[in-house]
Length: 130
View (cartoon, one colour):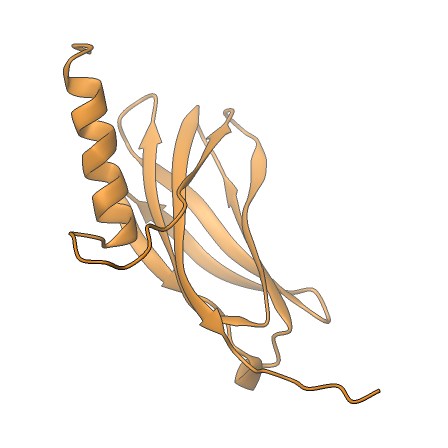
């Protein structure tokens, strides 16, 4: 790949992933995960939050696909998301569905790079009086 184009492509992915096109909103953090063929990786973990997790998937073979699922606590329930491809977002399971925390996990069929960003809010605020 032309070294001059690489920064432009990364900038495009970051803008697409975070949905930021300008303004004064704070920039979301985008994390990069490299997942080897046949391996499983924890891509995101949230506790007491609601919103969306955004992803961009790039694979060595160009298929840009990855199997994803949620692990929802407190009981370790698994919710399959199926094969996801290219770029998109998934809703974070919420408290109304019995979720205290949720972990997004993915499995790569081939060498894969996944960019993960989030658009989240605190789901329930609690006040403790001592």
